[in-house]
Length: 401
Length: 128
Image (cartoon, rainbow over all chains, first blue to last red; front, side, top):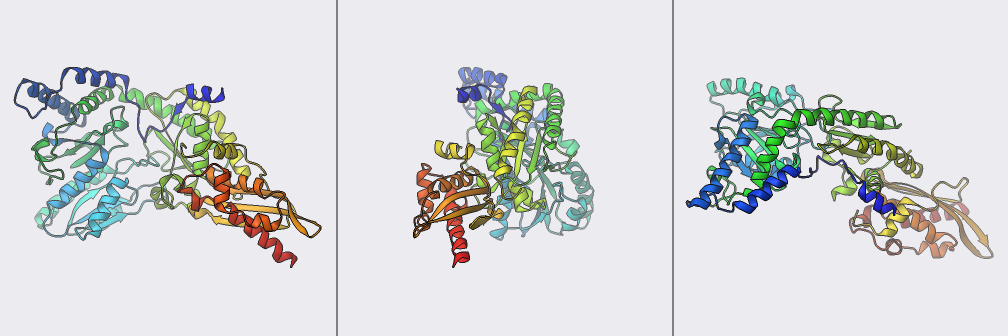
């Protein structure tokens, strides 16, 4: 009986992991699936019909991020592939051993890629430290730039703590610096940002950000999983990672994932109209959640208090371990996530929280709440009803509290 | 979550013998917060004839659901047993009684048997 109730009232607060598909996106995908199956590379009418939709979808992506040309949009399988393509693709075009800069709190899709290239001896790499709030310092970034630096890859918003990085500031600085470097015959430094978490909420206008490459994933903004794109500014060197046919301007072979691309374009069209409204609502609910949770003693907000995405709040609970909070909430039908070692499949807690300078114990107690378009006021109320009891119960059992 | 048996969930949500025994005869502490689990067991030992029996046992655990469930389970298994019997309880026994625990949790979260051994050692070191 209790189980039944919990089921019908399930609350999803893990939008940073993935979002439900917006019903309007699902409708668009179903409609397309039923009427258009051609291969966009085919010459006949079926192919041309598909090609038309493909290019319209590309146009939607291009317009939303204010790219100059739709050929700057390369459809991929999502964030990880976009990150891989950006970094590996650019590095592969370099002749002598280049240097790149990234941060210690990047998504694993970036960090593992950079580490692998470094271990193979293909690049030199610098990993920028972050402060307690999870932000890099411009001064340190400037100091890390070397003669052979060719790429800076920094995420726009962090997926675990939501902190923002000064992408626009880096972009503007590089534009100036690159002019000097050109005169000195040093290689140009390109800027890549993983905007996967930021995209649903923040201004991802590439001219505003001054970025050369940007990774985007559809399932974080109510589109389907397994699709995304990489924005690549005209003139940015990029080798192909998946070889084969000449799809995606020769940058990514393989017949396009048409149904998902159509879904992503629809999700972007909805975002275009509703982003402001979404953000306003989400921010309000998140503030309410944050206030309520911080009323529990021994609870701390991780990440930056202001410079963060509106959808995400993560907290450290003194004396208790994250997974036990997660499971307790799950038993109440509430879905959240944790950076605890217990759930990561490794024996160390989140690299992001450790990089922010938290101790192991602090990092183990981290719980992430991420809200979205379909989050209701009642959801937040429910969390605030059950959470204090859960924390109290676990603390009563803990030898550390 | 799917990886946890109903028995683990039951022991996690309604753990047995939580707390600390005042003036305990033996204390066992294991684990470290670095890997996310820490456990403290306290025992009371009664001598009946020539047998030493665990008459009471309580635990405190910082850790995941598996760590809490295994702690709760070992208190059930050890209570009323002689020290010699209790000492023989293994990690596998605890996991088995719980209907199994996920493989990844076997090493980091299944500390209860070690804590019990330490508590018994601690008791013996004081009485010898």
